[in-house]
Amino acid sequence: VEHALLTAGLDVKRKAAEVELKADGADMAKLLKAFEVVDSMIDGLSTEAQLVPGVIVRKGADEDSLYDDFGPLVLKQHEGKFLDHFDSFDKAMDAYFTLAEDKKMEQQKAQQQKAAIGKVERVRLAHEASVAA
Image: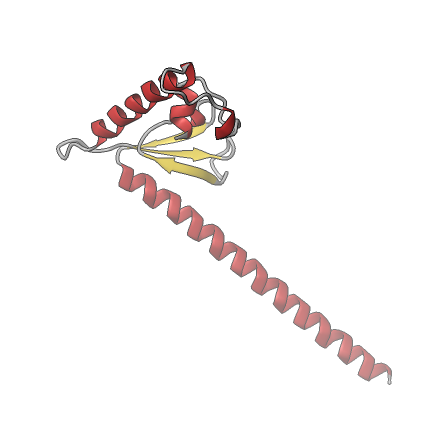
């Protein structure tokens, strides 16, 4: 939907009540044309003989930056962002979710290390207190 709105030249931050949606309105004509374009894009992906490519949108320019989104097409809202292109949509999904799982495991490991350090610190303080008494 966001791609269609941007393609139609409509402001994606406008509320629906502010858009002129009369049958003969200019905004409606632009929007219908944009949805036709999106439908044709989707129809182009549905052929079984063709391998559907994949795209991942990165949050930053470096290779270690987190992924922001993924899909089979470069959408209008992704223009100007850092993209990784893949031969197939499956490969793009695998890369996206693999990185997400890796980041999740890194966070869990960091939490476990923090908890272990906290435990060691409490034991050390208790030991010092008992030695001082």
